[in-house]
Each structure stands twice: as C-alpha cells, then as structure tokens.
Length: 458
Image (tube, rainbow, N blue to C red; front, side):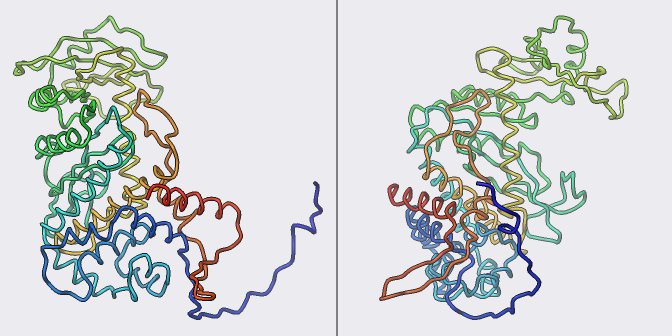
C-alpha cells in the first residue's frame, strides 16, 4: 500500500523537559537473559569455588567482584569507574544477586588483593566451560590455533616488560599465548607471559596441556593444530607427531637460508588455481632427524612490492609473487592443505573482538594477579556470548576445509545492541515481578528465543 508523505513526516521543534527519577527503570533489560545464562551455567557457584581457599571475610567477596567484572565487560564497559553508570539499575543488581553495586574503590581494592591461585582457578573454570560445550556436541574433530597477542600498558604494571610491539613501540606489555578452538570460535586456554618473550616461550608445555584436556573430555577425538612460523622447530614437529595431532606450521625463511635458493631454483611449479602454484619438496633442516611434508607455495599478487630489497636477504623475491612454505603431516591435496592452513586467519578476528568489544586490552591495576583476573573475565565474557548463541540454535554448517566456525556467530557488540541494551521498567503488580519492554516485534522474538532455549537447555 502506498502512503503519502504526510503519513511519514512530522514537524518537531521542541525538546522535552528532562526529569531523572528512580522509577525502577533499566537500560539493560536484556540482562535477564544473561542472568538465566549464569544460572544455567552455575557461574556464581563455580566462581565461589574458585575463591574458596580465601578466608578474608570481606563484605563483598572475591567471587562477587569476579562476576561483576564479567558482566561489566559483557555490557561493553571498560574502566572500573564506569560501574557507576549502572549502579542504580535494578536488573543489573538482580543479575549479580546484590542489593547495591560495590563502589569503584571497593572493586579496585579487591583486585589488588587477588592471588595467583585464585586466577588459576578462574582460568580452569573458563577452560571447563569450553570443554563442556565441545563434549556436549560430540565433536569428532577439534582444531586448535595457537598464537600470541600483545596487550600494551600505558604505565608500569607488575609482570610487564618492553618487547615486541609493532603498534606502540617501546611500551611495556603482556604477551599471552592463546589456544582458540576453530569450530566454536572460543578461547580454550591462555598462558600469561611477560611482554619480552618469544612467541614460542613455554609453548610446548602449554600445547601439551591443551591436548591432554581435550583427549580427557572427548575420547577418540581427532585433533588438529595450526601455528605460525614462530613455533616451527623439530621439537614441536616431533611432539605433535608423537601425540597423533595433525598439524600445519609456517616455515620461517629467515632461519633457513637454503629455502631461498630452493625456491629460486624451482622451475616446475604446479598450478593450484588462478592465484596459487605449489611445489612439494623433501627438504628438511640439516639438524633434524625426522622428516615431514613440505609445501612450497607461490602466490600471484598484483600489488607492487615496496619493501626494501637487498641481494643477500633470506626471503625470496620475484616481481608479482609472494612465497610461503608450510610444514605438515596431513595427507591430501596441496590446495586442501593451503586452505586449511590459511583458515587460521580467523583467530585474528577473535583477538580483534576480544580487544575492541570485550576490552581485553585494558590494564586496570598495577598488580599482575588483578590484571590477569580482569583479562580472564574478558575471555569468559567472550566465551559466554558464544555459548549463548550455541544454546539458542543448531549448527549452521558442517566442517569446512578452512575449519570455519560451525555456527555463524554475531559479535558481542551486535548482541549488546540487539538484546542487552534495551530499556524496560521493573514492576510488581499484585506481587508478581514483571519486566515491561517496548512492543518492538523483533526484540520480542529475540528475547523469547533466547529465554526459551535456555529453559530447554536447563
């Protein structure tokens, strides 16, 4: 039906008079969904167990502050002082099980008293939540991506150091190592490290722990691992092979000068598609005792290479091409392995979302355990948003060559805008608690879908 312009447009000149009052109004009506999720996951009780060894007898316990931090970050806030923005929100209080929100000074003091044992317990809890989902879905194949990410600080903080930092050179930082799961786009585990360590520092024990946890929770699972060139070594290759893990690792040109000669002398490139050529070699570093499959790849690029070029550099140079080498123990066609290995780029999307939408990169205190708890709370918030979406619907796709997530996830910021940041009024007519929202149909459908799914899952 065609409508006239007058049915759409109206003249608006005056600004309404502002009036602030405590009428049980909320800006986060969607937090009832998070409250239901926390209850379904038994999150408050499990956090309480993480701090059971502490007997400080505080008015606001460590577990309460930990839950507050998780919700704080899931709401999109960053600085501790921003808790004042929802201090009077009735739905937030109910989600946390509090009559009043602790003051920022209370939160800060509690973080300064945090201990490493408690942080380790929260880390184990975060890992268990991801493992429970993988076990529930009976995943036949799990793909682990390993990489580090720099968390810069604008001031001194315990446990930081000046190290590799391309964006903020010279700043102190942390450099945690992540293990993410490709199928669920969640963070399985994190190894906290100083900012001046190499990407592979303490990597083997960390990788071993992740493999063991997955095998314990999902017997018979096929494990895969993708890593960048910082992890390339005979120890890593031998270890993954001995654990029956299918892997692909980028090979660094800078550490093996013979690779440049090998590529430049190659004249039998086989065509993969319109962009890629490959050549399979039996080359291995001279000091290695074992062998693995090596794929030499050439990528056609149209952009001009403006990097400085010198004759004696290790990286092969040819106008119109870029080169890479992949070490793997996987069988199959070269194109399949290339697509599989390039799929690890999705991990950068997880890092980007963690830093920009879950505020993982913020460092709130000077003490390392407090910063680690804040950091771990951001990881938990991200994983819980993923968990909420996996509970509410079936898988969207089957396993792909690139190992893309089996669900098409919405980002944390999108979920906040759609369902969490909704205005509402909390009333109690005839003694029955009621939350009233606007009559928007799309919002009503989303709310009921999430709440019904959580009720069925519980």
